[in-house]
Image (cartoon, rainbow, N blue to C red):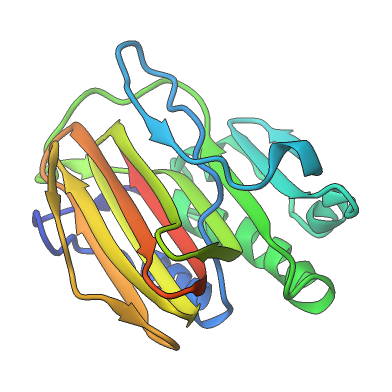
Length: 239
């Protein structure tokens, strides 16, 4: 099943994606550290999710689908993957009438978050889910685009001026969500190379940003403005 995006500022998300967004924010979901989208000529400015000298990663590869978890070195990240269901090629690529790409992503995220919320609720963790396979051709959001990657980040803490960001990703659409646990965050999003600045996110608040239209450089950025800031983030990328 494909997802049809209609508007530059307000893409028409399917019910499955909407459910994933709401569940992610209500459960404290975050955006993980952002890797590289494999496309010749891409430029990206990702931020490392955790202290690489004190963290460990684990991966699980499916047919057409892969998952990466990063956690502090005193935690076995494979534990977070123990309940992840087997994903088939059809489900992973969105070609199955029974399971779309976003529904498959939600199943993976729910399985990880079930373990995280019971055993590691206050631990900084990163989760990346990526659909693999052939790249789609450049297109506008008046055509069909698929959920390509999802990045989650739980319990990200920074001092004044600290940031969490991922931008200069060459994609069709990016949707970014934040839940502020405490402090004040200043959000910004990149749409086709230009930057826009929504309202601040204050303690206990949530914020959303979306950029779409056609394949170009997009991304999101949050900066902490209080002496201590903590938030959860999730970023969805579509191609």
